[in-house]
Length: 445
Ligand code: PLP
Image 1: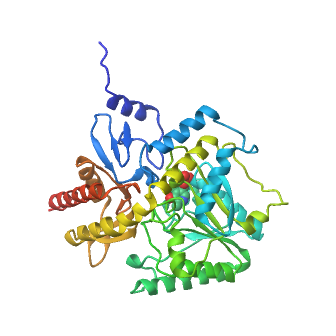
Image 2 (image 1 turned 180 degrees about the horizontal axis):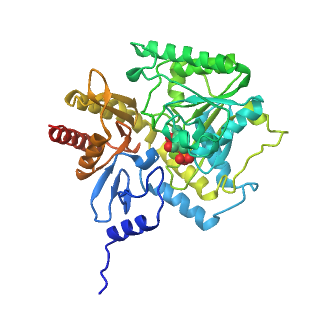
Image 3 (image 1 turned 135 degrees about the horizontal axis):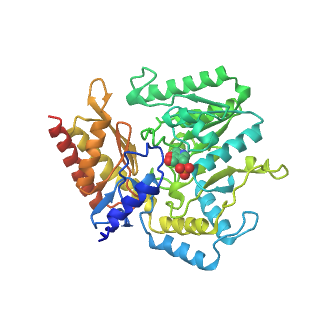
């Protein structure tokens, strides 16, 4: 007799037999399976529902299965699914225009890629070619993607086994809760981090540095919201030493912080500076079709009016991706989805997480904005010693059991729902986090 497997069983069996997963030892994996999704909710194959407080890989900004995006993709699929990048196509032009409308001046061109890593590769290339310089400075607390230069620009542990590109130098950015600079205020942290960065520039040789690559808000590294004035200070150093400023908005862009781009929120309070290049992916179309790109300022774009740009991708500006960008950005605008992220963050999620931290000493710090938050978990509030991986694993189990799909990194739980999350859903999630923390504290004795 043959036994028939349920879809849940078959999904896991096929996955474990044939699918090779990212960033993992393959042997011990038991991935969570998702069968369907809508808005901020996902369902497993047994029909159990979960609030998606991961936004998958912090990319599902518009929520799952938004009808306007599905419609845009479907209509484009019926019309034309592929054109070579050298051809022109209306969906591509419209997608570039929609993106540039949100970036503002002095940006006037978009180079499309398949995702965030290759966006950073090409931004780095543009900075090197237009400065004639070579080195790229980026933060130790950063993630920039899994390709040649991007993974070596990355600061975290994933760089070390992959360090085969040259010309990369790292520095420490501001992080007041775990300061490298013995600072005792956020302001001092920002000033000292800028002093450190200038010392790195001078020590490396200002004539060797093409770019500083920096996340709008470092995301995977712990939602490290920069102190007021820090990014403006980085901009000033770039001007002083003729360095291109590349802002990586792959995770922080398109609504996550309650702005179209995280840097815009800071620049508005810091005297309206702008970066030279912006990289994006994830939230631009919430990943319905893989897409990313580089937003290019006029002066850099002009450098390639007569000189050849030596870069390209078969799927640069793929029609399905482009249609999904137009559909997503128009719907986000029409439905006030970025504003929702901001309001929810300020009025509901931020205060709710602060209350949670007041109740659970394990939460050493809550930081973030919009729908982009991290809970930094500690064994001891005084030493700020991070909790062990076992505590994070236990918390994840408790959260899943109560119907919340979590996101974790190192000793942290990142609270990163879709930008369409409602106050009711946040209230449900906060109750689940509260219960899960209580359960883990109780079990720990
Ligand atoms: N940059 C940042 C800030 C990211 O968070 C990520 C992905 O998490 C990337 C780049 C890489 O993007 P992708 O995985 O689409 O290549």
